[in-house]
Length: 433
Length: 141
Image (cartoon, rainbow over all chains, first blue to last red; front, side):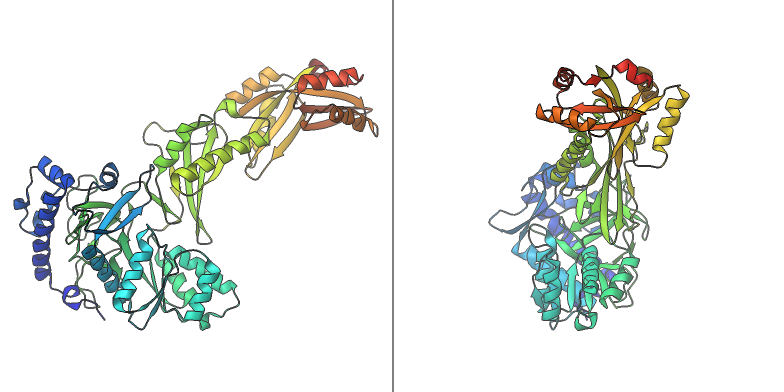
């Protein structure tokens, strides 16, 4: 079943017409209502008149995460606050989060986007969905929540955490759909297996998993352990949140709802569009957003697009598996971590050498996050407690800057590799891409 | 009366102590006493050597994290109750011992002590007629 069959199966020519019409409108809206975009377009000598079809999108400036930080909190809004009905924010790297405001219409389009995903997974109004994404500033919880309500299903607004209760209610309420991060789903699966409730007493059949990268192996494990079909839900706060796209029953690419969120793939270095089907950085333009339109927003996710018609009947473009990121951001236990944050802490503490090495791994389906550091010569001590106190000091400081606490490993002098050029600071052993 | 102790930071990895022993051995430096304090990821090797300055030099050349601490070496008979007597004096005078370690040579025992108040510790032990080993004598053992 499809939630919006007309759009989801629209032929490519009609889709281009719709996208062209909407691009023109959103550019006019952004130009006239946002100083930020007007200034950016003026710098490039582009006016809304230059945008006639979707192909003209290449004339528009790119938007990056730093733009949102530089204009914190409301600098990119293109609607008056009287029209903004919701604010979401995602974790910041240097103290400032990024903030996104939505109008009532923005929220309804977002809810429809999630509804399309849920229908693509085979969900109906008869399903009971347990939403175990966090509720709050994070878009996961409220986004999934609105989608389930839109299709007329029943929501269990669990939010994240409190695993024992999650399992109890999932069992007692007969939840059919589980919405959460794939790593939390695995943790729930293991807790169920360790409990004395047999799996056959659960009614789960669909998993809607996203907000962090995951692999086909994880999908297989989740499907076996929970006796479900596990589907990807893709999204990012800057565009709306979860629901920018979702997989269908074919589980062969994530359909992007391109009538609202226009995807491009560009070379992350030259920023030129790549040939169709080639890999590059995914860029989105929101075609219908009012509150905070995004023109050519660089997601930093590396992937490719497949415009072939899907066996499910949808023509909506499919995004292939994400292959990595064009920046150095790590997603560790759902938290965005930049090596530069680790570096900033090390540089502010005089006891440590300005060198570090990050090792990320996944053990028993939980991300591990280790930071190796060296003491400066004068801080080596004969007393264990003094060294342990320094270890605690840096770990606590990192927790407050990054949002999660790494395991600190103090290593011997000069054992962290020095290099003349760009030092390699990260070893990610998780094989998620 | 103060002796110099070296403390070397060692990761908990195979062969780390072996390497230190080899470096000192090759430099002709003898270890008089040592002790290791460790946790799950690193250890601190504390040792007394025959030539402190030279040992610091060769270890730092090999990039080890080395610090130097003053310690006291108490010399007492290697008999039951003699350490207890000395420790009672230390405790009774309000001195806290950060750590200590000992080795014996026949009828004599040598106890290396790192108190929180070095000067007071030395004074108290001397006032009570306990024998302290001079640094140079300790290094030669």
